[in-house]
Image 1 (spheres, rainbow, N blue to C red):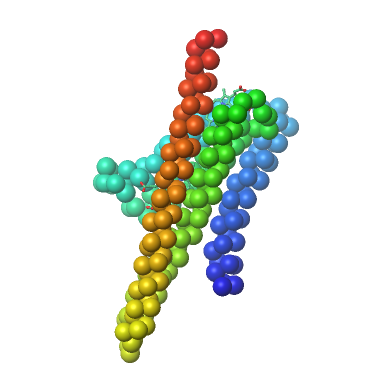
Image 2: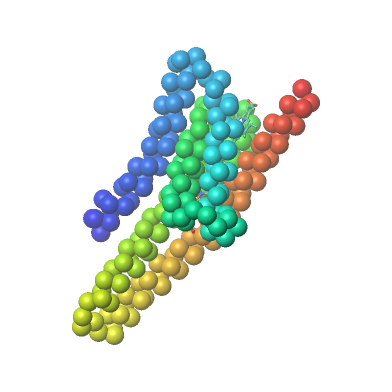
Length: 191
Ligand code: HEM
Ligand code: HEM
């Protein structure tokens, strides 16, 4: 349990906290340097990076055929992480409207959930590796094999249950983000 905590849960929590701390620091530095206006444009860059990260989904669903899925999942994690940081800097520490903040909150929930998914996937992979090693060994009783299979099915089931939470959350986030962007474009058009 201790090694699970040190090896997996701590780095994942650290990654999430680093994202928030990094955004606060970047926002502070931009303000001090007199470049706070850059933050506004980071919304576009951040949203573009997040959109680009969906290349993993395209590969997973075989809409595109090139690229290693493992590499593209890593890319998905890095692009969404940096995109979310830019969107946070873009949000800044001011409160004028509810809708964009709902979008930002949904984004941070999706990012948190992404971190949980990364953890579950690692745990599932390690279970599978352990199982293969065990089966390669000798003298395994059928009860032990069954126990292994039970844990495997549990991790796969957990991953599926996680997807049932993650995907609707992504949809809520994308809808709120689109509404925010549309409202910005709408008011720009009428100014
Ligand atoms: C993931 C996508 C995005 C999220 C979560 C997001 C979130 C936010 C938040 C929280 C604010 C601050 C609102 C406030 O001061 O109360 C904001 C402001 C703003 N955003 Fe975004 N944003 C996103 C993408 C974009 C994009 C792509 C654009 C450009 C097309 C954009 C344009 C703006 C503008 C112009 C403001 C200033 C509005 C004002 O001060 O009234 N945002 N956004
Ligand atoms: C704005 C933030 C994010 C969005 C919009 C997002 C979106 C998605 C979507 C739509 C999927 C499902 C892919 C599919 O089945 O086609 C997914 C899966 C996944 N995401 Fe994210 N994600 C975000 C952030 C993150 C972060 C920060 C991480 C990890 C640090 C992460 C890790 C994962 C993992 C491990 C999967 C599961 C892969 C699979 O089931 O095949 N995501 N994400």
